[in-house]
Image 1 (cartoon, rainbow, N blue to C red):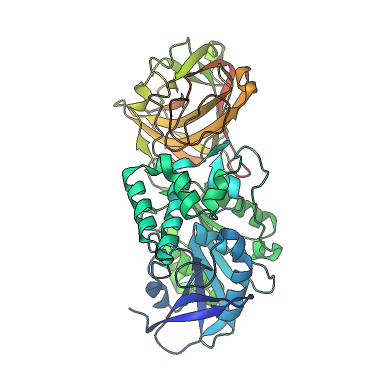
Image 2 (cartoon, rainbow, N blue to C red):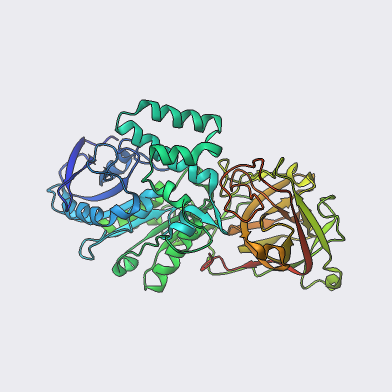
Length: 539
């Protein structure tokens, strides 16, 4: 069924500009409840990379409004990123509720930028009645641009250049658009992206983030929604392989702490691949909170992730099965690390030893890993890769700049639920080094499937001192089966997910160059551990 009408409208802002939006209305006589999406990519796209088209929602009784935010698409003004959205969001909600085709009930939805626009509001008198933010967070440093003291290099540049190309298109700069496009297609953006941003979008968020220290909070913005928003009905959507997952988990916890009852779905998804999506669930959520509960629909057989009777569900990345699990729960395992010094030469030599094991006395040892900037260790898959998701890394673990630590072959299933955290003593021979960790399943045929990754960076003379180091990995739900083993892989680079550390104490700014140094890192394993900690409240 198709919506009966599609039309464009102009929404006035508090400072006298006009924002363009496209409206899809249902067949029949209004007024209707409204679903609003505010985004910077052109209203015609309407985030159909992850959601059903607005016409589908309109065919189920909602007027759907997709707005070009200030300075994007056909909206007036200059685009300034997240900082512009609070006042414009409140103005948009007030305008919608004044329209004859709106019955006064408004819900908001969208992912990524469109997820955060739902939370950035200036007026507590103009809040959505229900909202469904997906894959977004409040902290620009931790949830949008960096982790472990490392800028998201490939992701950050790729996204920033996408916005810059659309800015070029808007102002008629075809040459600039083609420069960006060719750079992205060839991979040259990984080296020349910062210069392109500085020249073609110097006021953009991506360019600004690259000028800030990701290891320090100074200069970074952390957004705060109106307090009353936390108690509104909220559907939160995240992915194990999405870089904004910690942001989604923080939103869920904040809403619960404020007395809200948020719904949550965490799938084995990347930022753009949702494996069928959650449109049926989102429709049921908005029907319940903007119209009325549909008892017949609730009683009908519905797959668990789409079932509106279940508020929280997590997907196991091993078999894609959904389970009703509390994200505050934690499987609470811990392993000690052991190697006789060959874990970076023989991928089977290093061991992960459960702390409860009688052989715990065999844990410990030391080894040295060498980073050669001529052939830096590639980053692959995970939540920071352009190829995001679970991937095979069998070949990477055969490199001699990767130390591998393996559990014994399992004789019964083992569930991991929480956030993996690696802690160990490490020191380098240069004033700068990175630790890049991956957690994988080793299958009986020897193939290694990576499930979670994490990075951390240290700069300065303190790097030369043996000290306690910590690497937080991406949260996960993963069930290993008998015959499989758990593996921790540890390297000194993850290019191009993060820039290659030059080893001279300066902030990395791209790929390896002639000034990059060979870096040797010594690991002391006597007190090293890999643990599964609660995923909620982590940063």
